Image 1 (cartoon, rainbow, N blue to C red):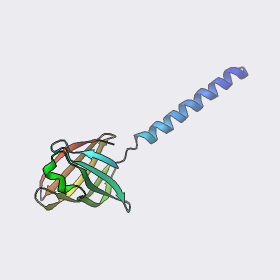
Image 2 (tube, helix red, strand yellow; image 1 turned 45 degrees about the horizontal axis):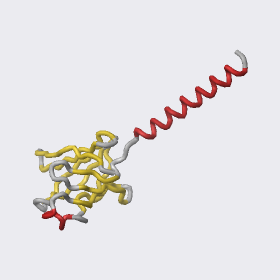
Image 3 (cartoon, one colour; image 1 turned 135 degrees about the horizontal axis):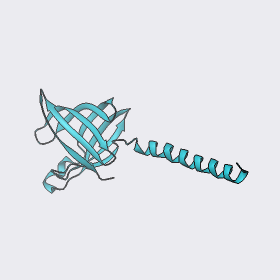
Length: 129
């Protein structure tokens, strides 16, 4: 094999290797950022709080709910699996706290579910930013 071909093969290998490494890092999505609840248009910012997952309301579609902005709906959810966090979840409509499960379904889809005993209710939220 001549030097030119060998050099091109090494460059191609390096390119493919870098692409695979970067693609693997990009797929490791995190739940952090602003997500919108489709049923209400409420936007919640999920953020790291001491190694746990927290979330607070940052925007509302219905101006009658404007007083909810700043309300923390999730405090200190612990990571319990790949793309899964569990912790207390506040239902702002009732004021009750439920066992919450956040599951990242992809870079732009997050499923948030609240459970009481064996009854669970949830929906998939979309990433805003």
